[in-house]
Length: 169
Image 1 (cartoon, rainbow, N blue to C red):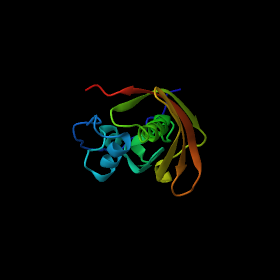
Image 2: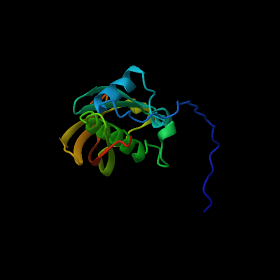
Image 3: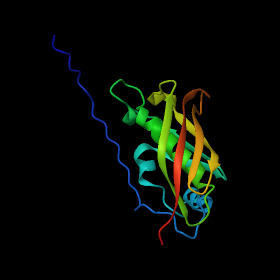
Image 4: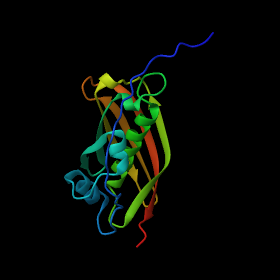
């Protein structure tokens, strides 16, 4: 049996970005993230690519929001799990970063993602709230929840383990 091929309408999406900025060795993680929020430092390119932004940061806490859209769909017609994972990874890492002193940085070494319901273009804003659980000299952990800003439903939750290291001069 030959599958029916649908006529499709092509859509497009364009975005621009500034050259990526790495954290200066003289700013704490919290100061760097606050500079991102106030526009002093441009957002990372991935934020524009996927359409999310850091909306709140305090020591040990980072909150991101992202608008859902068809450009994030998987072949099944729902928001791709990679979008969930990217929002979680961004918020989790920034929750850790917000607790780091100047001259220190992190990298994700493990990311655990649990998706509990699908999101769609009409879902609207997804809000990812992350909290650092432990930030040590060489290792940090954090946990987060991804919820619908409009419906309050849980869409995913996750955890991270991060390696902490010195920023090279």
